Image 1 (cartoon, rainbow, N blue to C red):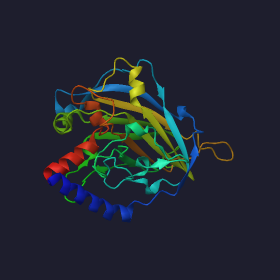
Image 2: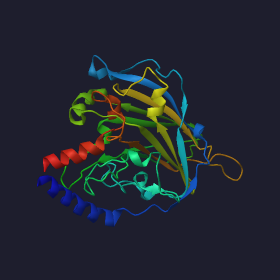
Image 3: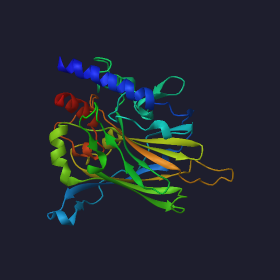
Image 4: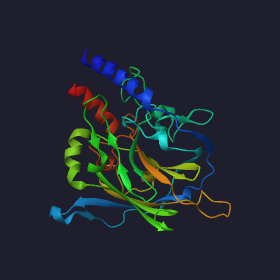
Amino acid sequence: MFSKLIRIISAVFAIGIFGQVWAAPITHYVGTSCNLGNAQLTSIKEVSAAANPADGVVLSDELLVNGPYDATGCLVFDGNDDPSDPVINIGQNGDGFLNTTYGPDDSLFFIEPDELQNLDDIPFEVADDPGWIQLADVDQNLNVTYDQSGPVTPGGLFLDIDALLDMSFTCVGGDVGECTAVEWVIQTDPYIIEQVQQLLGEATFDHLAFSVKVAGSFIIYDFDFVDIFETEPGLNFLTPYQLSGTLNTGDFLNRQGNPQAISHMSVWARDPADSSVVVSEPSSIGILILALMGTLMSRLARRKQ
């Protein structure tokens, strides 16, 4: 009875919001004519809490053995990705650009149809949710604005993403505001992991994506961590890590053949809650990019109601 009521409330709430806000981005899919090497994962280090909390965190030595790794996929679009921000941000079908489809065959972003999930039970018992969660927006000056996940229903539970991780971008090509290359770092706050794990339970993640907007087009670079971890036997989904890498605009050349400046970026993670990627205990690295946030928010909201 209560679960049925929550589905009805969620559907009404979704229709009310989506009809007003979920405008399709003004964009056109171009293809995969992009260089995977223009986005790289260069470092993974284990994060642990210092003995004295005032001392911050402790980072291990470099753990990547076979890296660095180029992006595992990229997609090119003409137009603007600004309207792509999700509203509820738990990975629901249609909520944000990466949770839609692209191209003439309605392809999914970097995943296959059998990887879709049922995060909200709308429609009932239908797995149609891609699971992409937007972590943050990054402006032209490389300032980071973190997103919020939830609430699923008005007044429901939500989480602020900046309470769980720190993300930074440093310009290494050109000047800030006219930057053509950046170094990025994403790091979990180790002091919050235990209490978040109590909510998340078993969790993992499988993708991290950067949408880079330059001039009149944007490119989405994707990292498939299932593939990467298969070649890194020392890494696992049960440890908090600091991830570092690089991005550059070598795919965005002007008429003179020079890279153009970044207009803005957005960072996304995909929640594979119902995929074949399974771990035997709570996943700390999943918390790093809010791996199971979609299931967390929908389940907790229904329980609270």
